[in-house]
Image (cartoon, rainbow, N blue to C red; front, side, top):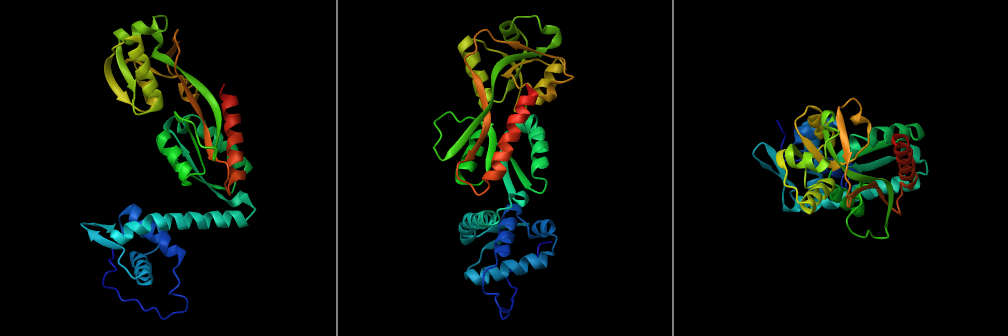
Length: 311
C-alpha cells in the first residue's frame, strides 16, 4: 500500500536539507511515471516510506503540493504537472554535464530509439559489436514509431534513433546516415512462388502491414496506384509476425523487403514488383552536437558493419 505524505511532518533542521536534492527530483519523476509510490520504491529498492519522505521534503522546498491520490494511484497536481517536464530537463542536463566533464565515455549512458523492425533485425548485431568497444556503457532502448523517435532526437530526449527517413527535409542540427533501402515485395507461401505477384494480391487472403507505419503507407499507396483491392484477413505492425503467418499459408502480404535473419527457416517467397516506385529508406539519426558523440559514432560504425554483414 502506498504511503501518502500529505500529513507527514518532517523536520528540516539537518544541515543542507533545504537544498533541493537531484535524487528527490528523480524520485518524483519515477513516481509520476509509475503512478505509485510502492512501484517507485520497488524500482529504487527502498521503502515506500523513504519515497514519501523524499517527496515531502521536495514539496516543502518548493512550497507547494505536487501529488494527490486518485483511487489507488497518485497523480500530479497542476504544480506537479508543471514540474515534470522541467525536472526531466534538469536531470537530462545534469547527465550531460557529467558526461561532458568526464572525458571517459566508456562508462557513459546512451539513449537509443529504434523502430520495431530494427529491434527484430539489426539491433542485436549492432549492440553485440557496440559492447565490444564500450563494455561498460549503459544503453537505454526505446521502441516507437519513426516520427516519434525523430521528435525525441530533435528534443534531446534520445541520443540517436534507428528509424525511417522522415518525409521532409531535416534541420542541419541533425545527422543522418542511410543504412539501406528496402523495396516493396509480395510475400507469399513458397508453394506460390511462381505465381504472378499482382494475381496473388488480388486473389489470395491479404495480410496488411499496418498503415500507420511508413512501409505500410507505401504498400497501401502501391495497391491504390495498381488498382488492387485485396481481400484483407489481418492487419498488424510486425514484419516477423507477418512472415510467420505467410509461412503458415494464411495469406500473402505486401511489405518492405527486410532481408534479415528472421527470414531463415521460413517457407516464404519474396516476389519483386515490376513497377517499384516506393523504397523504404532505413537509417540512423543523431544530433550533430552532443556530449555523447563518441558513443554515438561508435554505434553508427557498428550499424554500418551490421548492414554489411547482412547483405
